[in-house]
Length: 366
Length: 184
Ligand code: HEM
Ligand code: HEM
Image (cartoon, rainbow over all chains, first blue to last red; front, side, top):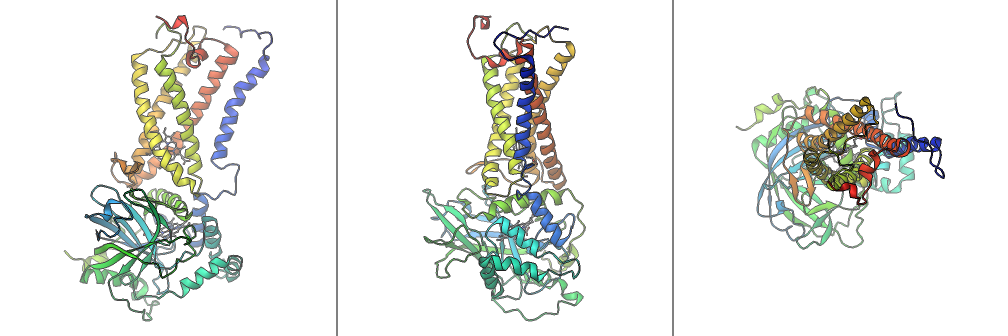
């Protein structure tokens, strides 16, 4: 074995040089685990959010960590051409884009009973022929209750059931609402929204703001809504305690789709200067003009089990060229959380959901 | 093995360019996978095309490595050390090709569009399959950790050659000065 070379005069000694050999990789290693958050226990990560959902709703392997109870639908979107000057996304052009959608109830409990005031959602994957697809998940409330993901996490944790009563502790929620006046205002708006009889005649809102990029590069902040053609009927009280009624929102939708296709108009609201783009808890003035960008037609229902809406996620940042994120901080948090939820559920065995293929088959058109 | 004392110019340029790119990818990766802030989207939008660029450069580099023999390791190195050096280099090549392919493959299996920039997408390279998606997503993490650990060892070994052994290994990749000994 060769002897180590001698120290050269005027250069640091062997001990120092050996220390450098060890220290450089060590520092790089520490920086790496630092980037991964090991020294920042309070960083709000994807895992924080998954743990929060589990604390509130329990663990339901194989199901979405939020909006767990749902059903697939399919159809198409046909543009009116009226949004083409606002966004260069090809689906606003003269094409017909197939759609894979999902209706769901908010919350992580896959077998929760349907009830009139529970938050309902529509999720869409609009797939124009050139592959520039647009994914969205939109809800039937007028505003989001919080402004950012850290508030979302605290707010959601405040709704977790108290182990003694099995119900959310009103004191916890009260404490959050008193310190967050914008949440108090948002909840008031949410509580006073008109409640329709079902999924089919409901309006779903983007809540979050995005930027539309026009063919010449101008950006416009927008929000949008899917507004039903189906007549709006106020909800009649329904006996949701009976076994028949526990899935009534979904069975009604299955029946409606079996009768005739359902249609919604994609109504785009461009912001005007001063509108709160970065804050999904604040509404925009109701006087804003809207643009009817096209018609969504849904004509078939399928169970989540074996259906086409299960093995991917409605990541709100899967956007076509022509739509980009705005200063609204929520979509990035959703994108990160949906990816983690998809990873977890994809690796788990999923038991049958509440809305089974057998519930749909009798009503399915052939 | 060859009698030249340095790696070819292309090999040295690719080595240092890719060192920066791969370390950037590793740091960006672990940070974005633990953040729910707006940086998540920005970093992931950078991560995809940068990772595919690494794949393309790695293929050029592998071809160059096979065509232009690298300088031989000094005779002062015991055979076991030479084997370890060769093994770690094979592992580094394997990982810098596997990591981007797994990234691309997992997005394909998870039914995500593989967006590069603007309207430019890559086609899926694997069928949509949830189990495959979950498996590849975890593999992407574990192989990234293995890649980083191998890079740390590689770096420590290089510094050992530079500061302690003072043999021809460090200048063979680091020196960019032209010397007569470059000439055949
Ligand atoms: C930071 C806030 C939010 C978090 C952490 C969050 C989290 C989640 C998660 C983990 C899922 C399940 C994803 C999957 O496994 O595929 C989900 C689904 C969903 N979320 Fe959110 N969400 C947030 C805000 C919102 C907002 C603002 C909206 C509406 C505008 C929304 C609408 C939806 C919809 C519609 C679904 C169901 C998609 C489907 O049917 O598959 N979420 N959310
Ligand atoms: C040399 C190439 C690459 C390296 C070193 C690398 C490294 C990483 C690392 C360290 C992570 C974080 C893993 C974790 O902490 O769980 C990550 C995540 C990820 N990478 Fe890569 N990656 C590479 C190439 C790619 C490519 C080419 C793509 C896609 C085209 C890709 C897509 C992703 C995605 C989608 C995530 C996960 C984001 C999330 O979970 O929210 N990667 N990568």
